[in-house]
Length: 466
Image (cartoon, rainbow, N blue to C red; front, side, top):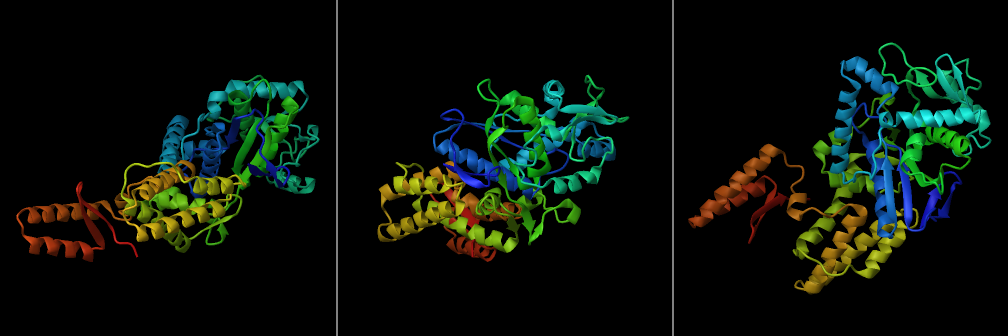
């Protein structure tokens, strides 16, 4: 497999630190608000990476953290009067619900910063032992001058980093680029005891300590892959890398991977710009799998321009897969077509080349339809196609729904209830051989944009697609 390594700015052959095993850490959300499309994009990108590595027969340990103590969470506490546990617990549940809706599986390990306070303190103590940390009036800071490779991960210049750091300048710091490892608490803020005074951890140290706690080994401090959004590259990942290198003498990760930004109609998504798009709002209108397929369809490193016209076009592409699944009408499979499987995995093994992988999917759909046009009763082809679609769910997270359920999306609950009532009324009319009433009800449903299918399992319905 080839992976684009942000640290080297080139594709590299992926060779895990331990043969057959892969350890991945992805920075998760700060849980003070609902998930937005940026969270969804990143989660889907690394869910795809995890699925691909698993399909390529690696044993993957996937870790995604929750930042559950932070300035934003404290602000939320002050605004709402709720406890930190109430806020964090609520938004972790909401995050997981939204991720499940778009087919993102839970991580193997989901650590919280507040569960790792002792590990964070021990990490900072090691930095003091190596003379890489110092105390000033508001907390403990990392001395960036002690890392000879500082800024090499993000490829930034010193003056650029200093200008960014001066946004929150503290004149007591040895250097504007130095960052907080431990923040002394103010009145009314959550606080934990430490050798330097009561306070809470800085953002960057949390991830380094949790990585060391959960997936570092005696053989190698390193992990295989560290991932996250491009917005985290500097300062978060740069600072993680610096403090970890100074604490251990080894680079934190062998490969760094970053997904691109999400834009809405061309503008970078940002709350400060007032155009943040919460995932929960999108899920009210679109099926989670449709959103997943849309966000999946652009290469993970590219910036993603979210707009509804493209989303609708993407749905039509996914519709073709479900029309084929509806057409084959079988409930078990045979062997996956080896050529098709190889095309998909070969594409994904090239730095998750999703365009090439989806081209193979389009080709499979077209070929299967052409063969079924020639021989509609080809049972062997139907079983193979069933298995091909099941393989797509395994590696891409699409295609698992029953077609009639998939084609019901976009219908509100009140309308669904009306449809079900009309179908029941039609069934009763058919029982008493009142075919005029039965046909009239079918016509009424058609006028509502609903198509019905009588099957041995009962009458199924779906939305008529354009």
